[in-house]
Image 1 (spheres, one colour):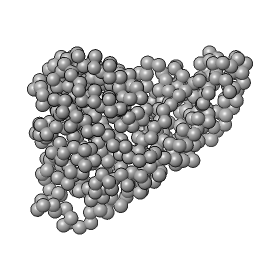
Image 2 (cartoon, helix red, strand yellow):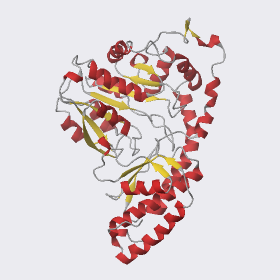
Image 3 (spheres, helix red, strand yellow):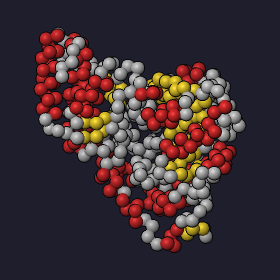
Length: 428
């Protein structure tokens, strides 16, 4: 089958008529399907609902003579800190356990840097003049919005299958105004790439001009394989310490896609100096996070080995959904020259690179046919995709029959958008 670019104008018109008829038939089904965010499905939430009954007696809340229902332990219960140290491969003293959202810990860190400065520099960023922040893209829109909300200049760094383009990163950090970089090192959002060992090593050995440069290491998908066995990942905290910059990295994770996104536990992991410094700042805003929920999670999840067994059950639900998405993409879009995509083994997204100039139109057509996806441009700083190409698909929430229908809408819409581009006029 020749690509669209190799077809005659008459052949393109005939293809457009077929796709238009198919699209109009889909519109008549009055669908209302959502693939906009990486939400666990009801089946996944039901699977872990035993968590709700893990604590049933008051005496279970007494640990080492202290009642976890009361004030105290700002950095988290010792058992919760040990749990996250086991998960991430660091030390309990290098962890700070928070509430359900790691995003909140990320925001707090940037906010504290802005108002008070970080450990290696007492100058608050609000008094440092112009602030720049590096944003590997395509990336996570909520990361970018945090630093944009503080007025920082966001600088796009190209992504590769091995992680951010480190030649570009190493050049940009020579500027003392560059204060940090956002990273999703394993099964990146949205492309599903895992940083190579070489990339991780180059991060640990960065020599930024800013003494308070912050690597924001969002390890959100650290145990989230849906195909194959668990793949261990280097401990960036120890690597930075070995390279002589122990305070440069801040790692984040949560149980949002292990238990309940709305009521899980999160963690900030960093050097012991950083944890002590940040704990002193956070002590002004709260006395402690929800330690009852921390205890409930530790009793339920136990340790990394037990958590990985649970993640295999998640994979049994997620794996077929991702297989369905990739099957549809291959069947509908292969050899047309209008899109390409990566085959992830974990994480929560599939990223489709459509023909430049067609992403926004594809999503508009999807919306008109009742399928909601992440808005065009969201994976780039300021919501602007310079090529109008990247589209993020989140297969996790819909049941598989709805997912198949949503992918039919998506593939039909993408082909219509591409055909409009080749023909030079809109079809509807």
